[in-house]
Image (tube, rainbow, N blue to C red; front, side):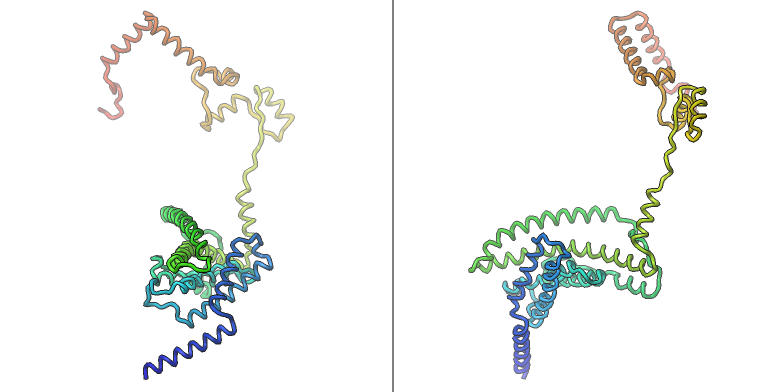
Length: 375
């Protein structure tokens, strides 16, 4: 009785699938068309808004949804199977949710927020399926998108700025960046292997082992791409929701951004001034140009010294320094050269001065006279 029931169930499923294939075409043919469109979109120079580009995108979305429906009818994948139990010809159908995510993200002409939400569901389905067969250990945890939507519906306060809600985690960002670099290097290596194997896979007769390795590498590459897609989707969703919240409050996003940029660019205007040689010239020029503040060289110097901008070397006059700022440095170098020459020639006066200094250092210990610490 149990066998008859199972046989009836199998017959019904086969008839349903046969009917589906009669209306929509065979699953391998549909998949070939989907993959052909994917390769076209990856290599074309057409803009994403081009009519032909969007026609292929829409056609691929419909075909991919049909292919997923047909694989479900066939029960090609099971929760209690291992990847080794999946036939080589069925491996490529694991890519279908990932392909549906790819096409959905490239569709235009509809509400972007809804499209991105759909793409997020598709990429999560793909990663869940890959994790089921131990192709990846990464699992996307359920986030609080639904909670955020509930808050918006309940009338709770939602931020209307495009900035992040939390302070950035610098360590987490650094780790994430390193992971992306490592993943990029691994993906580059995988793509090279895929390119080499594809030559053999496209032949009429291909070894099953080679074909299986090719599809497993494809899955590995798509898992890596899906991780990047998921991060981009989360960021785009956050921005789109904040924009929707701003729009609901009657805030023009473009005008808000312009006003913020204008406020940032608005600075205190620079007021020009004239430096005069002396006080008399200051009065004359000031009388002729009353709108321009003026100051003498001495006043300018005092202001700069007060600000700590520069300082004239000790012993130099302001006019001498203004005439030749490097003169003091030159004089100091000449003095050092003269002192070295005296030492080299055993100048009596210089030698006596040096001996007296040595004697003083012998008699006076370092720190004598310094009573700050009351030692």
